[in-house]
Image (spheres, each protein chain N blue to C red):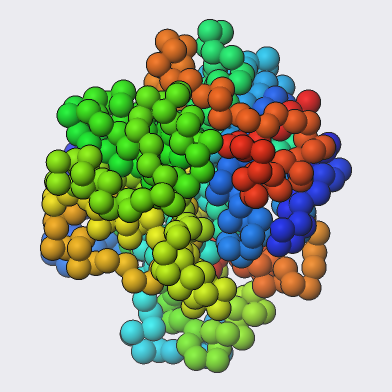
Length: 390
Length: 162
């Protein structure tokens, strides 16, 4: 079959690779209909997460049709149109019992890597390096889905492929940031990053009752989407001081909940960007935490900061004093898709949650390397490329 | 005997310091080069399984694949707060130390490898009835640069902090 493969730092190519097959009784094989490029893939592409091998298939946000099931699959049949959670969960461990599916104990086949790096191993993920299990990704004609009863969800007829595909990861991640960040009715929420996850975190915050939601980015075309499709306010950090804006817009208190949806390659017009980039290039720190620092500093006393952006290792100049003295709650997580996807699909069917505008570049899988280049360079008003493998 | 009664007796035994322990000695392996007799190098490798202790310790048999380990001592006890059962394993011959650790790991025959793999696979089998296999056939190619990562993934369930 055809698949988009990682060939080295900043090198992608579409190659012929072996078809996936059933390996466990709970597996299903899905014919991929749509597969979305994610901002976190850029960390893999850029070599910031050094656990990729030449030939690894990228992609973790996808939708498709089940074409084969293992003997223990009960909830699905061949022909089902499904959206699949990017994180793989067994549904039976202590973490899955508590709806913390991305922390699953049994789905990372290489737990030693992340256990050594982070103390304990999260679950496996599609197309996200050998640190996350080395599972083949979804930028391919077919994909093996382990524990299909737990991670694959039938899409209601009322929801189009174009909309549903974002339930796989972006919408679930965004919703989790607002939910576990503790957004309550009446809150002021600030979201760093106006990509798909940031927009959907902002939308989730509004649907959870936030009074005012402010999204921060540097790209006007993304901020225009925030205003038009999300119904939130927009701040361009290149044209003003974010801390001042947030203080003014929250009556001097600071936002109740700050959601960071940027990750380890954050930018800033200030000198801290040069500092972080230099340290990152010299391998003195692995991640650039600029948005996290801003969020911790801007958040109101006793407020909550939720880190949705992907980080891999160590950061420098974390404002621990602000966190401690302001009594903040700082949380983060990879996304617990299985917890949210059924609800998200219902909201998509009801029209509460729209996502089609995020798919700015829809293209055949053959054009995926070019799609990633456009995405990486933020050219042509790109928010997310979506690939059509079949 | 009912599950509650079995658990109670087990918990009492733990309280008395006589933690339910099963030594698997029948296929005891010879002492490895570099292994230390020092008790500090007989650490327990411990994992928690999301199953009641009565489901984990059925009869006198150890759950698979723990039963296949040789030269080890295995201990079970209820995890606090209804978190299931803690399974602990230690190598009777002790752990490799110093240069032996590096030598064994490079050669791929560190005795802790079998213990870690057995603990992880036992948990998966008890919780899900299965052990997740990696994708195959692989889509990757072998390169010199990828050799360390390939080694790490070959021992993905055998290395780590467990």
